[in-house]
Every structure is written in structure tokens, then in C-alpha cells.
Image (cartoon, rainbow, N blue to C red; front, side):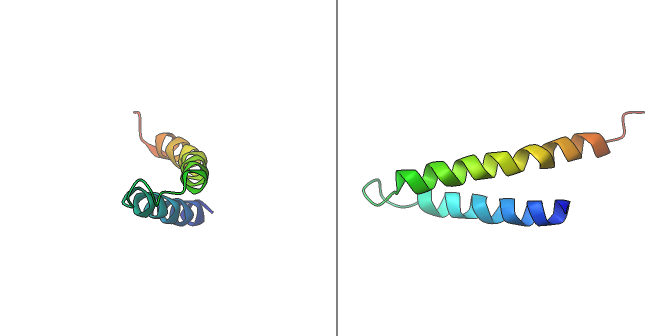
Length: 57
């Protein structure tokens, strides 16, 4: 499950980077905000999972 979230998150952040490389006239702000929100929401469980799997002993 975590692998699927990671793959989807990677794809979303790739699309964000492609969208930001466009000229300012071509950028679709609605698409960019949607992708940023989705990428952030998917990064949260990945970050939490990372911290739970780190050894603290």
C-alpha cells in the first residue's frame, strides 16, 4: 500500500514540476493548486511512515 502511495506521489510531483516549467501565461493555476494539494496530502502518510520505521534505540 505504501509503495502505491509513493508511486502516485512521485507522479504528482513530477507533474507539478512540469507545470511550473511553463511560462507564466501557460500555467493553469487551478491544476497547479490541485496537484500541490494532492502531493502534500500524499506526502504526509509517507513522512509519518518513515518516522515510525526509524530506529530510535
